Amino acid sequence: MEPKMTIAEMNAFLEAEFPQIDGDFRIDQITDDGCDVTLIVAERHLRPGNTVSGPAMFALADVGMYIAVMSRIGPVGLAVTTNCSIDFMRKPVAGVNLIGKARLHKLGRVLAVGDVLIYSEGMDAPVARASLTYSIPKH
Image (cartoon, rainbow, N blue to C red; front, side, top):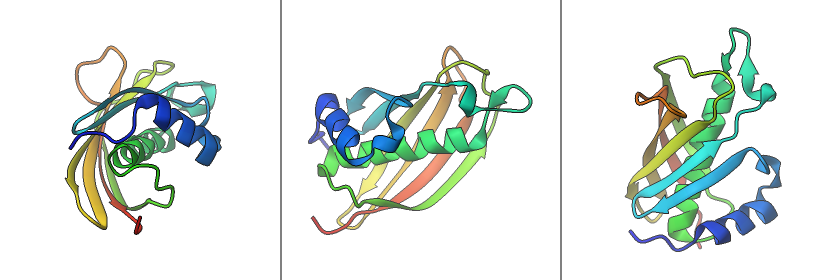
């Protein structure tokens, strides 16, 4: 499905409606089946053991899927996560940005289902995989 929002439009929407994430994420591309989003890793995203924390990776997965859904349905701020399952597969490289590749598998009238593969920048193998379902309000 062709996107309804450009990166510039999405950034403006996020700045107005979701200022809590300002400066943490960068939208790299919006594609026909999802989007690629980067978590700009900072000291606050690290945990003991010198790795990126699970909550930071969860945030990347959730924000990535949110952007994938919004880019398809338009700016409907009240779309919410109804389910998320995340598998942590490898230790991310500390201090290196994480890239989330969000892909929508089903976009229905009330639910969207997709997954996000998370990579440490420069690594070929994913460090985590998340499966998410979003509830879409009437719009």
